[in-house]
Image (cartoon, rainbow, N blue to C red; front, side):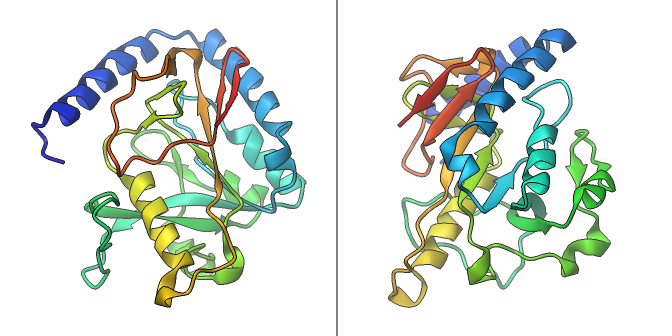
Length: 237
C-alpha cells in the first residue's frame, strides 16, 4: 500500500485522532476500563478452554493493561506466548499470496513465556513495553516453528476498532503479517493441517471502539473475532 494512497492517509488520520484522545485519558479511567475489560476477557469460554494463548504486553497509559491476563494464564497452567520483534532475516521468504500483508522491515514471532518470574524479569523498551531479553530467545519455543505449539487464541492490541470487527494497528504490519505467516504454516507443503487459525480477541478502551465502517481496511487487514471494550461491551463476529 503506497504511503500516499487514500487508504494510507485515512489510516494515518484516524491514528492521529485516536492517539490525541488517548493522551487525555486519566489514570483512573484507564485502570477502571482495564479492570472491566480483563474481567470480561477472563470469563470468555474461548479463553477458559484455551491451552495456548498469545498476549501482547501493554504499554503504560495508552492501552488496556494485560498484566492480569499473564498472571491468570500462568496460574491456570496455560502456555503463554508473547511478541518478539526482530530484524527480518535475509533468507526469510516473503509470502506469495497477494492478499497477505506486505513484508515489514522487521518480523514479529510469538515466543513462550516460562513463568511469572520470567515475565517479571522483562525490562521495558523505549515504549515502556516489557520485552523478551535477547539472551533468553534461544531457550524459548517459537509457535511458528513447533507444530505442537500452535495457538488457540491471540489477544490483539490496536489503535482503533469498529463494530464491524475491523482493526487499525500502529502501522507496522506486524500482526497482519504474522497471521499471514501463521496461515501459511497451516497449509505448508500443500497439506492442510487440522489446526485452525487462533481466535482473535481485541481489547479496546471505549475511546478506541467506533461504529461499523469507521476503520479503513484492505484485504491484508485481519478482522477480529471478538472485541471487548472498557465500558463492558462484548462483540462477537
